[in-house]
Image (tube, rainbow, N blue to C red; front, side, top):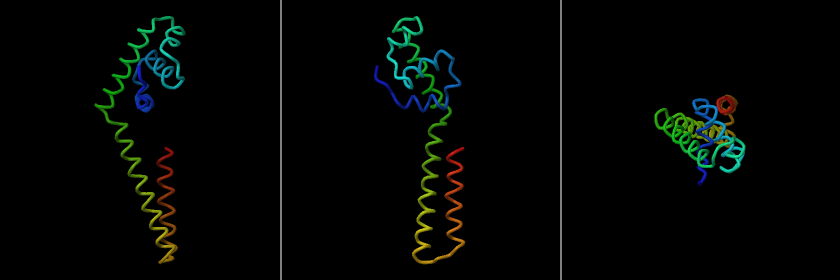
Length: 121
């Protein structure tokens, strides 16, 4: 079974909406890098049972993303924030090269600080 590493992001966003067992299996498989056999042995079930549970949980995560789009929205916002930082850096560099306005420098530094705060939140 090939691992879809995008599942780890979906698990971060939607993991709390899964059952504890589903979350555990996905966590073991994707984050702890355990094999299906290792998970089965630890949980006292068959390898096929683990595989089926993981496949169902993955399908639920993808279904939630298709319906809610939180990961897509997050990635779009991150892209926009990166672009804002690039623009603030360009403004700062151009001002240092040509204008030397203290207000523009302070504004560009503040923009970058605000974006940094939003990214950390």
